[in-house]
Structure formats: C-alpha cells, structure tokens
Length: 156
Image (cartoon, rainbow, N blue to C red; front, side):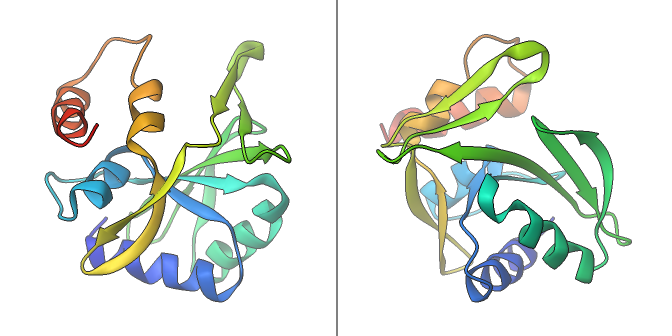
C-alpha cells in the first residue's frame, strides 16, 4: 500500500462520516510525518458502529473479505493486492474503547489513544504514540516492530 492510496481511502472515510484511525506501521509513519518503510497492508481501528458502512465503502472499491475473525478483526483485499486489516472498536462514553481478541482476550484503547498524523502532506487520524507503544508488548518482535519502536520512542 502506498501513501497516496492511504490518503485516498481516508478521504473517502471522512467524506462518508466514518470514524477510522490508522494503526500499525502506517500510524507510526503518520506520527513521524513520512513513510519510513514499506507496508504490506494498512491497519485501521474502526468504530464498531461504523463497521457496516465501512465495509460497504471498501466493497464499492473492490475490496472483499479474505480473513474473517469477527468480532476481533477482518482483512479485506482489493483486486490489485492492497490489504486493509480492520480492528473493530467499541467505544465507551469517556472515549476509551475495546477490541475483542481471539480466545476471549480484550485489547484496550485508552481515551488518550487517538491522535492525528500526516501522510503525504494530508492530516490523517491515527493511534497515538502512547497507544502504539502499549500495543507493541507481549509478543515476539519482528524487524518491523523494532523499527517502529525505535521511531516511536523519539516521539514519546
């Protein structure tokens, strides 16, 4: 997925009034303000109330569900190979959220877990530095995770 494609999708999400935030490696790059590495996919956190409209919008753009681990996550793939990894989040009144995990786990999004960053000069909603750091614990880190953590530590 290229930066211009991320921006294009986020413009469509905003035009449809959908609450969507970049997560994963693209969120790190949004905080940094430039692309720092290649990305196989685009991770997003989506307000669970917007999920049906979100899936419809992506479907209109040719994306189809290729991994369905609902309610935890979904992956959608476009004919050109772009992948969107979707994390549905149920929000509380205080702005915090929860994502169901596999096996009964829960991923918590703190109320300070949401920010904005920049991709290709466009302001994009993304997970905050503190939220991204919280999510990079409890598993064996890959080279991409180590790269992302080194960048995030500079913005802590």
